[in-house]
Image (cartoon, rainbow, N blue to C red; front, top):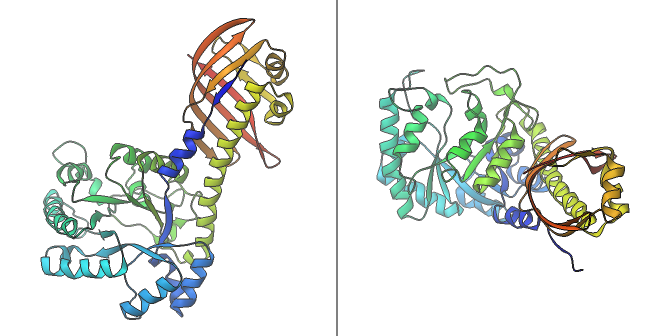
Length: 396
């Protein structure tokens, strides 16, 4: 009998389709380039950095700086602009010229001016009007305009939601979108991943930054810079942010670290992201191998890919241990003819991973053919460097 297996290859395809490039905003490298710009760029290149935010360097002419970027293979993706500049079409022309000189795609505004800690709806309305008008001018020049919020926008007003929601509802997505700084979403008490899913078509770029556990939320748009901690060690839930970002198709992530430890923490930030990426890929491959072993009744690989403590739950309520699970497949009691696992949702936290998807299969149980469609939850754990299945539950 010919057996067919269609596993999580579609996940690999979607991973390529929604490939997220990771770079840095150059302020993070301020100490690296302070004494010698080229030496700092070489050090960044050796860390694997290619994409940058920042169209210019204050210590040298643009032509000289651009030549160094080109020499060492960097690509400028975005550059900043002030709110004041956005109100002058002639100054916008200068910004466009500069961004195009560096080959950037995005112009970013980082602040809406307001009186001290008193950010009002009138301030937001002015911001919306300025952004829509300036964004149109950028779009006509082939560039995209983004606003980078700092948290004060999440104040309530006499309307639905927050002033951030007002901004998203009243800016034209053809001309205005956002660069989401996940630290500054968390700081006013918001959930960055939930906001991504709420506005899935408005966030092409992020700033990745984690916040020290125990930090106090506020709506000021300010926080102690020393509360920037290594990605994955704070309260922003970077793993969930990266998962949501893949779901909505974020194009670029720029690491930002405003702490005095930025030059020390930057390699750690990069290592965390690479580890997360490698872990997701490793889990995906382990799921593929497990399902191949199930279809082929391969006892050696079934044993290799599962923990001794395996709890294998069926939709009927039956629970098998590892020995019973393997024996039911190798004895022919349960025989998979076809198996399709769709596109899995993978979450990794340390040495534990959760995999959710739907399983559609043609099986032969006790000599009787059957078609099953189940929702599956796998729990994987790392043992001696290898991912193994610890638990499985299925529901119809």
